[in-house]
Image 1 (tube, rainbow, N blue to C red):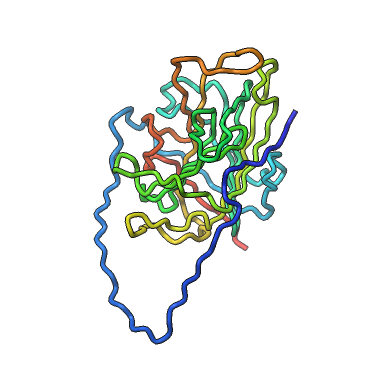
Image 2: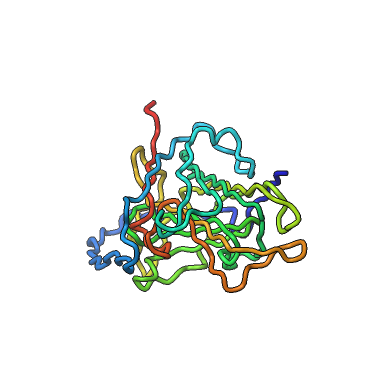
Amino acid sequence: MKRSLACFGYAAVALAVVVSALAGCAAKPTEIVRDDYTPPEPVPSTAPLSSPRQYSAPWFALPPAIDGNADAAWDQAEWTEDFVDIEGPTRAVPRRGTRVKMGWDATNLYILAELEEPDLWATLTERDAIVFHDNDFEVFIDPDGDTREYYEIEVNAIGTVFDLFLPKPYRAAGKADHSWTAAGMRCAIGLEGTLNDSRDTDRGWWVEMALPWTLFEPVASGGRSWQRAARPPRQGDQWRINFSRVQWTLEKQGSGYAKVSGHPEDNWTWTPQWIVDMHVPQRWGLVKFVKEQE
């Protein structure tokens, strides 16, 4: 059985603000601002054994419906490699398969995730709840790849969204902005099984997202933004992107599930971080935006 759910907990409309210059105003001298930011190095852990994974995201002549059904429009894109442990392939192979497709057009970045799961489970329903306390799927995007001013979006199998903005990583004294909202995002969940029912064996769940380019408008933090203005990528542009899946070990409890006490979560990612920390943007994957020449 496959059911579709719309993700909830996000603003449906993005506001645009246009400021016009006043005619006749004298030009001000160009402000020179010193940029002292240095990307923080990762805490030593497993040394990277390979370069970050890469993906070519095709131009979508026909965009997907974003209804949780993973329609034929997704045939335009290839699957990524299967996710591995966050610390790399020297760790245990994930118990559940996870893979992603991406595509783009003039309006949106499109993401499709397929998550194998015999025990569909989710509990959190309030917007901006700490969604990774459930099994979840997470998206991390740094448009200009400078390791700062990046975005995180999490969703569980109910469709509850947790979205936030980081002016810089936590290791660089960054503070997450939980008031940031993925304005205009469309998201849908497809379930192949029955949620929170331990009496059967499920197949898994789908996550579909359409993220408008306007979502990546620079967010002023500390009075200044260093990020490029939001715009659709150009042919050949590359963005730093990674995906994470948080997976808890469950036990059957009546007709439902409960977490196994004292058992830590698993963290599975598209490209390894080589450390249990998603906030190392220089180790995210490279997504190249490609478009056939007209």
